[in-house]
Length: 186
Image (cartoon, rainbow, N blue to C red; front, side, top):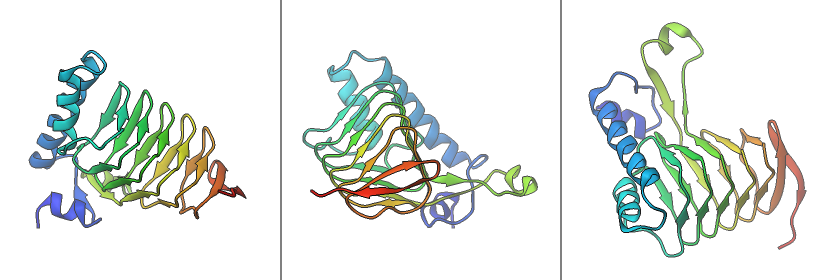
């Protein structure tokens, strides 16, 4: 199995020294640079984002620069998504974002983790688990979502929260780590 195949299966893989993964991340970094340095809304900016994500852009999808992806092609956006300035998608594990999700400035979606043991960590080992975001969610500024988390539709995540565990639909979550503060009647 290649290191990328291991990565996509959520297994420990060599993310730091595998030439193929390094090349894919460098390509994504260059496309992020092209997007971030282009005039907002220009043909060049839209082209860079389309190449980065590897798909036609969904209807009503907006991303403000700067934005950063490890791979780009492993983050999947639905229609009506808004991504504010300064967001980061560490998409070694796939990130799925539902319809009409609002992502505030400086949010991060982190699918990767490293071994606690420094001997293994220094070998470049990493494990990436997917993140799933339901429809109609709103993320306040500076929210961090960690690997393997599923957030149900209709959730509001308060600014500065760190989401470490799954959240049910239609809840307001806040804190470090984030916990359900109340349920939202939709």
